[in-house]
Image (cartoon, rainbow, N blue to C red; front, side):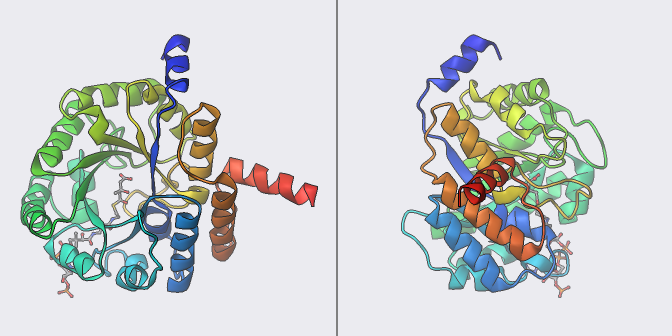
Length: 312
Ligand SMILES: CC(C)(COP(=O)([O-])OP(=O)([O-])OC[C@H]1O[C@@H](n2cnc3c(N)ncnc32)[C@H](O)[C@@H]1OP(=O)([O-])[O-])[C@@H](O)C(=O)NCCC(=O)NCCSC(=O)C[C@@](C)(O)CC(=O)[O-]
């Protein structure tokens, strides 16, 4: 991106929408997090101004035991009006459980890599699409919005490079099936800015850019740079995870999503509006990091909280 484009993006004064992943993508890799701690996290994220929160997933408890209490989480949280509480659903069984738990919306998750699809949801890309069809029909019947994820858009832990044409193909299929938004996942965080930009441009030829979101894991520390490189293409929805929590159980070694605090700090610095109170968000991230006995993965939160401690 040229400097002129960058300043254009910075002057846009657009509102950016952040989809908070901490309670799902973040905690799906952590063992034995008490249900009460998940609920406290979600409630504190909503208090900090997040309007889109992925609260859990209805997947096989044998595959991902960490998410087995998602129904309890969704049923027990104090909901705020105007906040969407979402859940992952790989099949009809998951959708029915999400419906019963009153998820505001659900997400189906596919991949641009056959090997990842097989390892993550135990079927090929084509079989996954077949499984999604009845789920989409049920969602339509119940008026539940469905988001779509495509994993491995910038690389696969099993296959390495993935063709961007395949990313675009799968994205278009999910969009045409009725997903209101497609989230493009750099599952293992290997992307770099030009590659991310090229991938987004290619997908945007088949799915309108305003229907696309970016979901970048920060394994190689490139996520913010990748987002910056994509902003002037018009994308305005980003997935991130408070305190940089997380990873995927089927992408060993991959770290969490980009920390929400770091994303918000950059966007506010560029003049974008997010509706998020950064101070409250940093405290929410610190609370769950303390609960998990791990270092806070957000540089911004670490700096803000250290400054605050020094001032006290
Ligand atoms: C998809 C399946 C279920 C297929 O798993 P399967 O074994 O092929 O499914 P099955 O239909 O043969 O069922 C096997 C057992 O699972 C049960 N089952 C079946 N479905 C459900 C369900 N929905 N909820 C609860 N239980 C379920 C079913 O009832 C049965 O139970 P049993 O008879 O053995 O007692 C399995 O592979 C699975 O659960 N995978 C989970 C994968 C996962 O959660 N991965 C992490 C999330 S994806 C991600 O992190 C990437 C993302 C989205 O963030 C974007 C990015 O970063 O790239």
